[in-house]
Image 1 (tube, rainbow over the protein chains, first blue to last red):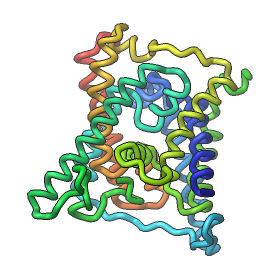
Image 2: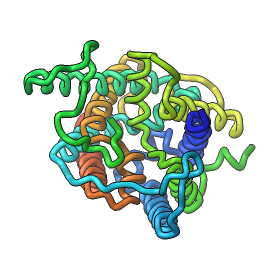
Image 3: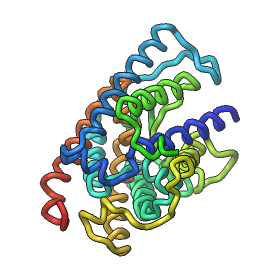
Image 4: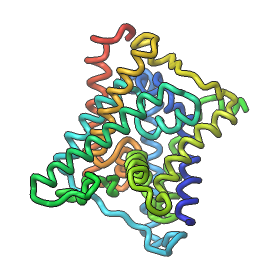
Amino acid sequence: MKTRVAGLLFGIGFGFWLCWAGFTRYEVILGALRFRDPYLWMMFGTAVVTATLGLRLLRRSRATTFLDRQPVTWSPVPVQRAHLVGSAIFGVGWAVAGTCPGPVAAQLGHGQLAALFTGAGIWLGIWLRGRVVARELIDGGEPAAADGAPARAPRPSPGACAEA
Amino acid sequence: MQFFAEQCPFYLAGILMGLLVVGMRWTGNLHLGALGSFVATQGFIARPTGAPSWRVLFLVGTAGGGLLYGLAAGDLHPTFANAGFEAVFGAGLATKMVILGSAGLLIGFGARMAGGCTSGHGICGVAQLSPGSVVSTATFVGTAIVVANLVLPLFARGS
């Protein structure tokens, strides 16, 4: 329960931040990609430095999590083909739409209704990918879950911290 | 509040995002990734057994944050309009439906295949120096830059 509350609160912070930083605006994203507006890159650099330092500090000080007193930790993920192919496909969509999953959710809350179209596309794309994986599983001889959702990934999940 | 109506200074936005990533990990080794939250939400809607996971609540919260911002900045005016997008592709609901829907499809499919998006791989994964995330980020940034600069101007009205 506490984790769910934490998730909700962090989500609210994330959504608020996305709007305040301007990432729910098409021109901010495309401005960055077309090298007319450096904001995104400068924010990104600052964020990565902050997060890297903070995470290092936590791990070095053997910090434990508030919710379950486990050591704060993460595991690096080796590069896989799916990272490259998937990211290339994602990059195309990102440049065309000028948005991505997080900002789409924030846009919906913010009343930017065109995000309904982007969101529907993302929803379908996620679902289709799930179907593709399921079919690979069936061809590989492993049973998929009864409702068609993939039972298990055929190889280790490519997510840094297993997204899917 | 005029304070929130202005774009947050980049260094503050960066520090806040960094602290958000660190805060989530410190709280419960929670991974900040929007794509994962979409996947979790879709999974929950398909099979709503038990309570929704924290990732579902995170997605709900993200939308809620957008709403909260709208109230704080005083710009909560629901509309299908999108000035930046329209300047490139033209106005028209059908245009938005087709282009945003198709682009969304690529975003959802590709990001799930890669196991993450700009938040999960780009910020969280890179901060963890995870090779998969670094390569993913370089790939989607590089691809997006190519598309934005070489492909879009061919098809779009504006530049």
